[in-house]
Image (cartoon, rainbow over all chains, first blue to last red; front, side):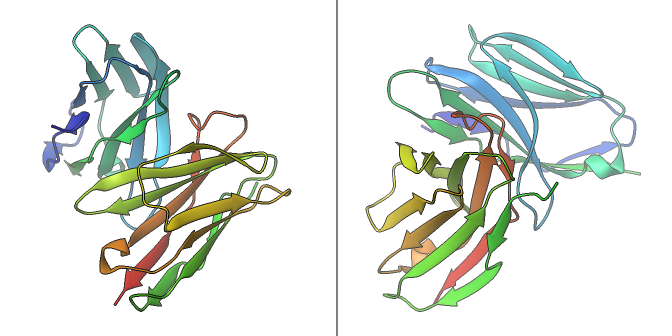
Length: 112
Length: 113
């Protein structure tokens, strides 16, 4: 079983929809949780990061971390065709054995 | 402000050869991390350097090595290339000694034949 699980998609939604992207994990030592967006033939771009539990909002993007359920989410409001990309979650430890693990990514297509 | 620059962008090597990839971080960034991205395994952490010292290392064989220079530029070396080393190699830089807020380059696409 992978330490970080992410549905690969593809996920197709109409423009303007609310998108929910999720990852589950098994290692309780993860404390930092990141979301990256990767366009085709480009390197990943950091969207947001959260330390420990809670919510964080940045424009149309909201990241949620539920450590009790080992579940993180990224919500995209008013999705746009330009949001079409692969979204990767990532997590890292802050103590003990260092681990920085990425999910496999979810391909998102926002249809105009 | 210039982003993270990786050279070369594309590379074809033969099995058994060695290869060196280069990464120039964003000006002022002192931490450089390297990652391997493949369709099968996704994005995997290789190692991280801060102030010329390797701080963290992923689960890769010793054929994968790196170094960082005093100007924060970094190189990654893979010796005795195998077909399975074909991948997109990404470098990311960050300001402090944590690679949480990391900025990625466009990567070097390595093909081993």
